[in-house]
Image (cartoon, rainbow, N blue to C red):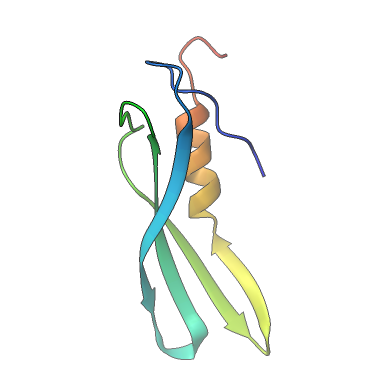
Amino acid sequence: MEKLKPCPFCGGEAAVSSSDHDVEDGGAFSEIYDVACRSCGARPGGYFRGEFFRKDGEFFIVKDGYAEAVAAWNRRKDGA
């Protein structure tokens, strides 16, 4: 799992949170991820939806919203 970079504005620590999971028929569900600086509240913009399902006791990731949130936060124009 990729580590979150410090905030580009204040240098503070960032955190990913999740909410609003929807459960559908057949074991499919989704979760919404958000990432923000704990100090100044900066966000990369937008929310990132993860999609998952369970089948025969196994857990499958269809779309990794957590990884998308981390990648959006860590993206810097200067490439750092």
